[in-house]
Amino acid sequence: MTEKSNEEKTKPEETVIENVASASMLSDGSRSSCYASKLSLIEAPKKRRRPKRCKCSMAASIASKPFLGAARTDRSLGSFLPSDFRQHPSSTVHILIHSPTHMKLQVKAAGNTFGTHFRVTTYGESHGGGVGCIIDGCPPRIPLSEADMQFDLDRRRPGQSRITTPRKETDTCKITSGVYEGMTTGTPIHVFVPNTDQRGHDYIEMSDAYRPSHADATYDMKYGVRSVPGGGRSSARETIGRVAAGAVAKKILKLYSGLEILAYVSQVHKVVLPEGVVDYDTLTLDKIESNIVRCPDPEHAEKMIAAIDAVRVRGDSVGGVVTCAMRNCPCGLGSPVFEKLEAELAKAVMSLPATKGFEFGSGFAGTFMTGSEHNDEFYTDEYGNIRTRTNRSGGIQGGISNGEIINMRIAFKPTSTIGRKQHTVTRDKKETELRARGRHDPCVVPRAVPMVEAMVALVLVDQLMAHYAQCHLFPVNSELQEPMKLPQSLSQPTCNM
Image (tube, rainbow, N blue to C red; front, side, top):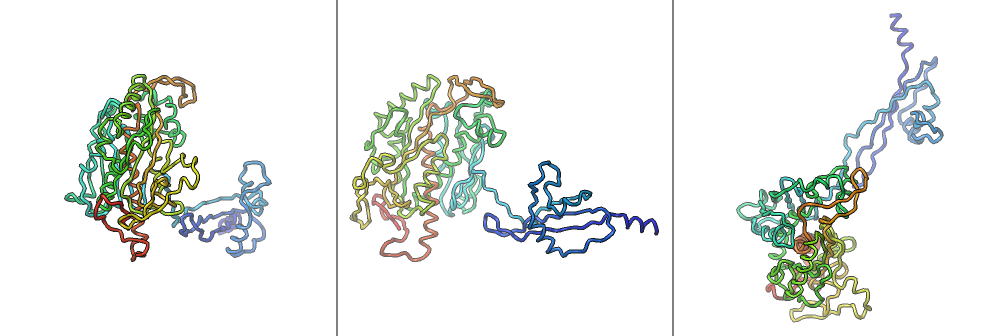
């Protein structure tokens, strides 16, 4: 008993101070308990016991004093403690940080999903097992099969002509969920396309040396690792999932309002299709698909093909412009202020590989006009619809579609991977020279046409769903709006609200 009493007398006294912060507000608006930190102070034996203090007053005392001491220049633990603790040089301090039990964390930085109501997530890499997408939010009871997607996938696939990459892929798609007996079920639609013609050995040099103007270097800077063969996720094969999902979106838009999306090549390098040559009202898919460069004007198409051939045989590349027109678009799509329709379209198409510029309507040329020259005057047509005599607004005013044809242009840079020797650096920052191997497009714009159409369709179907949900759940203002309905004739100008 005597030995035990002596041990009890000499055992250091342990005082536990709990500093529990009140609930704080997270960035997403939800409330969650903050970290509870316990500071365990083991003090040297003292002749006189320290008077007990209530926990609430101690917590307030500690919370009012900073834990980062500015007076100490050394890196000892004492420099990071309040002065109350630093005045006990013989004390040992233990800091235990306990994770919260109800902390809600949301990380949305991956960037692989597009859309709000009609959501598309793409997956896969250039030389992996395959690529594809998951479509969430598709309305039920829509007739759908692989053939609906395959048409646009064939327009996008490699190896279709001498002016595209010679990689041979059939890009045959398979729907594995979300469709039953030829009809969408309203559940997520999974689409898979296998990779069958990979040549990873073509990228041995590029595993160490960065391709100039390619994503090789920036992927390393961001992730510290990358998939080398084919460029991995930065390859244009990622767009297969977009095109497949875009085909579904285009079908919904066509069934609902007769909306058509037609894109074509309007420039290759220095060969420019003059404005006014293409009539948006009479433009057809057959005209666009009548040649391998996808320019609806035969004369300029031949010049564009010749321009691509000239750089292809030299191991070089060129860029160009894709123009896109949207007919029979319902008015009212788009929302001010931060979700204007042109802003959503710009974000969508600028997410495509190799894009460098975007303009719609009069674009930059409108800066050379006066207001009286640029304004689109209104009139009422034979169907009672409000129309504009000109369309310099490009079918969008105030960020909202006005029922006119929406038109825009997207600039694509020359392909980064070329067969000519270039100066670059390695991953260990040594200067070197690189002559890239592999199979690559000498000009991306012919295959970019269905990609642009797909991204435009994804934006419009998403905006259509948002507009219906916000503005047409209740009876409309009959003096200014029309109920959303299918047009009686697809040949009529439509503003079907």
